[in-house]
Amino acid sequence: MAEQQQIAESAGRPAEGAADVDARALDEVVRFTSDLIRIDTTNRGGGDGHERLAAEYVAEQLADAGIEPRILESAPGRANVVARIPGTDPAADALLVHGHLDVVPAEPADWSVPPFSGEIHDGVVWGRGAIDMKNMDAMVLATVRAWARTGQRPPRDIVLAFTADEEDSAAYGSGYLVKKHADFFEGCTEGISESGAYTFHASDTLRIYPVAAGERGTAWLKLTAHGKAGHGSKVNHANAVSRLAAAVARIGEHHWPARITDTVRASLTELAALHGVPADLDDVDTLLDRLGPAADLVRATVRNSANPTMLNAGYKVNVIPGAATAFVDGRIVPGGDEEFTATMDRLTGPDVSWDYYHHEVPLTAPVDAPAFAAMREALEHFDPRAHVVPYCMSGGTDAKQFSRLGITGYGFSPLKLPPGFDYQALFHGVDERVPVDALHFGVRVLNRFLLGTGAVPADGSPAAARRPVRAPGRTGGTGSHLATGSPDGEVRR
Image (tube, rainbow, N blue to C red; front, top):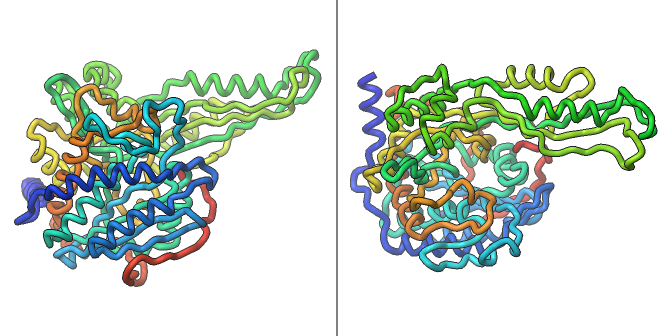
C-alpha cells in the first residue's frame, strides 16, 4: 500500500520544468469564452442543433497553434472536432480531454443581458455556455496554444474532442464518434470533462473542490396504462387515467433505500472528516444532516431516484380514454439496476406497463488513481486552502459514451469561485456567467494537471500493458478535414 501511495503521489507531481501559463493564455481564455458564447449553438433536441460554426472556430485556433484538427460532421451542421497532441513518453497511456460545443436554449426576455452576447463587464463573462461548458472549451484551447508558444509537451498523448449534441442524446456527438471514429481515441484510458473541480463554499473558512469520479445511470421511463374507454358520466373501474395516476403517485412518494457506492463512500468519509463528525454510513441521512451545505454535493447520489415528469391522457373532458401515458426520470447508482427494476415493477402494479425510453449506464472511477492525485495536487498548488474531495454526479455527461471504449471519466473543469456564486444553479439557468478570475485560475490548474499527470499506473505495471484494445490504425492527416455520415439515431443520454 505504501508503494502504491508513493507511485500515486509521484504521478501527482507536475512534470519537471513545467511552468505556469503565460499572460497571453490568460487573455485568450477570456476571449475564447466570449467568442464561443457569441456563436449560438442552441440544441433544441430531436436533431435540431447546429455546432458547425463553433467547430470551425475551435479548429482554427488549434490549427493556428500547429495542432492538426479534424472536423467530423455527423449530419449537416452537427460538427465535432478531434485532435491529438503527442506526449513525451510514447509508451504512456493517452488522456482524453473532451468538452461539448452545444448549449441548451435561452429565453432572452428572462436574462439581464442578451444570452448570446458574450458580454464582459464587472470582471464577469456573461452568456449561455459560460459555465456549461464553453468556459472549459476555452481553457483547453488557451492551454494547448500556450504549449505551442513555449515548446512544452505533456508526458502522455492528449486527445482533444469538442463534441456536438451533449445536451440531447449525444447521437450526433460523442455517440457518433465512439461508433464511427473509435480510432481517434486509440490508447486513451482516462478522460476529463465537465462538472468538477469548482469551489464549493461549505462555510466561511471551508473551501471544497469536488472532483467527479462517477455518474448515476440514466433510466428514463415511459409508463402506459390501458383500460376501458367509455362515457365520462358512467362508472368505470378500468379507467386508464386513474390507474396511471395511482402508479405515478406511488412512484413520486416512494422513499428509496440508501445504496452507498465506493465513490460516495469516499466522498462522505472525507466530508465527515472535514466537518469533524463521525462517518456513520449506516445512518446516512443523519450524517448528511450533520454536513450542512456540503451535503448537497452527495445527497442526490446516495440512492436511486425516480421523478414523474410528464403526463398524457385523453382528448375530451367527457370521454374516458382507453390508454394513458406518463414519463419518469429515473437515475440509478452503480450496482442499483436490479433494485430499480424490481421497485418499478412493484410500484407500477398489474395495470400499468413500463419500458425504458432511454437507458444509460452508471459510471465509477477510482479515487486512488495517479490521475486523481494529479488533479488534487494542481488544485492545491493554486489554492493552498483547497480541500479536494471525490463525488458522484447525479446526472450524466459524454463520459458515458466514451466509457464504451474503456475510458474512465472524471469531472475536472477547474474554477475558483467567490462565496455566494451558485455554480450548480447556473447550469441551464438564467444569467449564466463566469468570473474572469475563475477562468484564469482554471487555465492555470488545467495546464499544471495536464503537464503533471503521470503515465505510471497505480499498480506499478508497465503503462502499455494496461491499454485497451486499439481500433486499427491511427488517423493522421494535416489541416482541417471533413468527414460526413449519419448517426443511427439511438437515444443514449
